[in-house]
Image 1 (cartoon, helix red, strand yellow):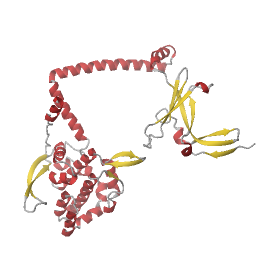
Image 2 (tube, rainbow, N blue to C red; image 1 turned 180 degrees about the vertical axis):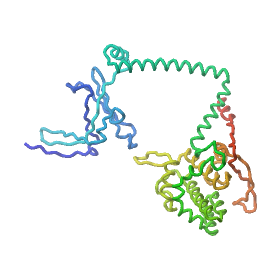
Image 3 (tube, rainbow, N blue to C red; image 1 turned 135 degrees about the vertical axis):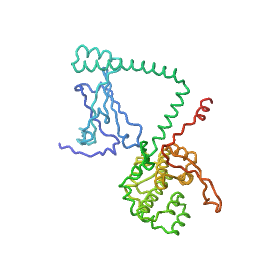
Image 4 (cartoon, rainbow, N blue to C red; image 1 turned 90 degrees about the vertical axis):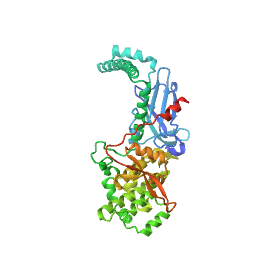
Length: 401
């Protein structure tokens, strides 16, 4: 009697068939094994939702196998496996997707000493060498911990707790700011080389801005007035109003102005995609690098999102500030920039100080109230860079409370 087969997709069954093989032999009595299947708790992340762990417990040893990590079988990634289940009564067979699991014995920790003794008595030369090395490392780690504890005690006695606490706070602050600051050349002899222009805008990116930069350079006073009415960033407008007459300098400044405008708009978004800026003619290389360098990838309902987090927004602020220094003869208007990017004046000053800039104040005409003056904060890059000390007052009060 011929058998007939029917196909059962894994989407309908909800679970692949699991085929296990034991690394140290064959199982004679499968009914004596208790199998359990564990799934990853994250059912949304596409990299984690397919992870599975199979556990087989027996009277002697538990065995564990997984479809991820170093112990998994790579054949699952290279091939597809199927298993057929034959119903002898109806002589029909259902074919399911299958995954292979390599089951490895797990020796509980309390038997570790016994295993070491077995290796000493019957192990190979390689196993004995590994055991000796592990024991030496354990002794070395214990000695190192004792030496570190002694050294720490000596340092505390010499410097005092408060001085060490100040050093820790300063180090933490420098580490935090280093995460979002542009590439900095502290050995530079010229101000324009401290935050290199080609590190802010690569030659490839600069070339891609030729067309959009040309449109910026061709804007008329009427166009600028319309942009002002549409709430174009004031930082960008100020530079467009003062574009150089010389062709090369005008071209460079207009490309930078478009890129600056794009970064400011990007910083005001919650999420970005490859479609962002397409209406403004954004080159593909620009949006690709902005997504790569200024967003955080996250998963939402099974899809990938590029989110502009708070830390990425500060990174964009620092990048824009460095770009403004090159556009304004190493001087930038912090007041206009913090207004355009929607951050506080205090946060803007924090970024400028982290970049080692010299701060000053300058009177300027108010755009909101004609005929009046307002004070703007300015930042300039002057060598050597300024090193600002971290304030401890707020941290002290918090600890006292």
